[in-house]
Image (cartoon, one colour):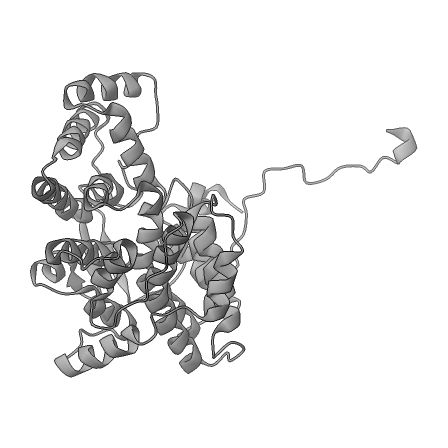
Length: 376
């Protein structure tokens, strides 16, 4: 393989054709099926509408959305088999590892298990998108020794998630804030977890296997786990008056500051634009803007000294925290959103499949003389 063909980390290498998501790194645009996320969020779109858009290529009519919401809401309950699997897991386990296990196990109990048809995969996608929020909340309540809460059919996906997590009717403003966050995280072209899902799907493995691959990939701190690290950093800083000195010292010590920079965007991540505002609004509503204010200082210093902009992970951390979502659930919440994009890409892969089999740039020894054991 020639040097001109090699790109470390596959940076800027085109690996698939897709109609789902477009990113303009120079202009800082994120587009789902032709719709700019600024227009989707500003126009009052819901996460359910965006899931439909990602899957079907068009925004739904009123009737189509009602039917789609009904199909999602009726599939929210976990299978009894998945519930029993959860009970066997250690309560001290990592939430993402537990989620990965539940996703994988749920495939065994899916009514369409073993059916490799496209229509069966669509039905599986409906169940996975509907049940992933239930899995995440069930994991948290199991870990904390609380009784499980049955999902409600009358709430939005975001509202039902907060209800199952906390056991109380969610504040409408919190539910809408989470709904917007889910829209912003729904898809992002061939990010690491989506690419992982497509590689698995390209072998014609089932949809549950593809999503299990994606969950495992999302767990990494350089992908979905970054927002957890951001919040831990903000808590370590602790006080607004300490923020500038702390981040300056951290940069001097060459510590990795999570939540900044992006492989694709050369300007501000458009998702961060919304999440910055939402972090401020959430802090003001909850009566505590400390973490937002610390974030602003950190952003200013990093931009000045490193010329880096915040990405989607940076302000989502403080927003989720002020909403009352535990830090260890930040990455699982990411999965609750990105399952929409994962399933859209897996279904697209099935429709136009070709096995994904790249080559490696071999840098090892290519020829050696064998020496018998007694002569070594």
